[in-house]
Image 1 (cartoon, rainbow, N blue to C red):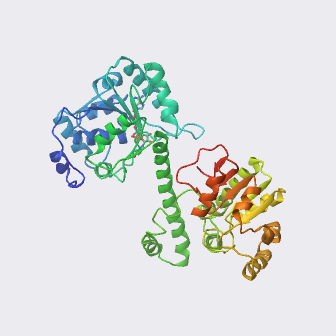
Image 2 (cartoon, rainbow, N blue to C red):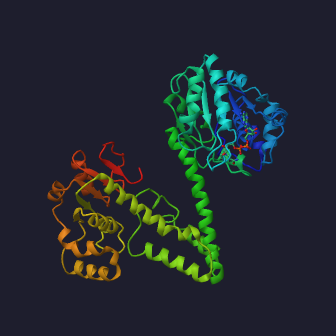
Image 3 (tube, rainbow, N blue to C red):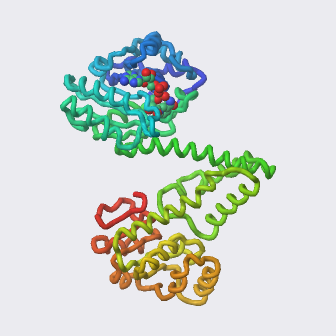
Length: 470
Ligand SMILES: NC(=O)c1ccc[n+]([C@@H]2O[C@H](COP(=O)([O-])OP(=O)(O)OC[C@H]3O[C@@H](n4cnc5c(N)ncnc54)[C@H](O)[C@@H]3O)[C@@H](O)[C@H]2O)c1
């Protein structure tokens, strides 16, 4: 049964009528925490034909779900809960222990509010983990725990699992399954989103658990993404921070446009049509600082413009300092390596250009020279000669902070990378190309590698390899 292709959120009958008949083959589910997430999950999983037991401490919510009434305002939810109760698929209780014994899978969607001090309040998770541990201690059958709360990465395996393992005496990934399945439903359209999810992510402790939850979601998404639990936890945070970034970015653009009498909606309508560079994976992988002749200059220009207009744009203003922080990470990595002779693979701000303007690696080179390191440079696009001399003369005028680098540039530049690497004890690689990949691979065991561009798809596990954000 494929629901998403026929799903019409305005026609709740279409969900209820097309739902699978109660099928003994489908795993039964208990859902602990009947708030916004839990109530929607209860209704939607029952609409797929699962027997669902809702659990909460709040007796009013339990009574409401058991009666097929929605405890919250959410489009189509009340009708779906009523249908689930009528079909004997939905029940509700305050007894989590009993619900775990009676079901195959437990979804955890208790509240994780901000704690004093800004962290995450784990009290509900700790309480639920304790009861799960007690229930699993006496349960023979394999049980799967699905964490749905928004929690800091590492919480599922670092907080919840140890409590369950200690109390149950069982081992996660072997005696019971654990997964983190982030929740992407938007309040107001949560039921529709359940049936047409933007994506389904299953961070699982083991293959069996991944397969169980993948099958559960197959009717609404056959292409669930499987990951580690920690990656799935982080995805949830990253999604929300990204959405918040988009909102603030668009609002700052609006604030700049208004006093200029430029229609911000027309601007952003055009902006979003660029799916090559704007709304795309481009620029969205951790790597080195931005540089070159455009981005740094234009960011400064927009900040300046906003300042002149008397408009506050803290997000845009934060870009330049954030970019310098990324350069500092590379400088600090080189310093803490203790290297005395360093080779830089890549000098221009990106491969395939000899443009040195605002190349961020120049700041790392300057710091290395200031620290007294012996420095050599290699860039396939940069050759000694008149053009380089012109560039250096221009930069000497505009970049006094790069004095040492510019004065010694031609002497440090080598077109023999192999012999250059032989002499160094650390390599900073700042451009991603196959030649550098090969060179760095050959030196992986011998030298300290500081990779600011994620040269390899697979993160190397060598002790002397340092990736700037991975
Ligand atoms: N609301 C959303 O749209 C949304 C979206 C994505 C993720 N989340 C995350 O999902 C989790 C749940 O969010 P929510 O908005 O549904 O929360 P909520 O506050 O609406 O509901 C939480 C429920 O958990 C119950 N509860 C607390 N401790 C319990 C316990 N020990 N045993 C049984 N029940 C208990 C509460 O009584 C409450 O009914 C949070 O971690 C939240 O960050 C929420």
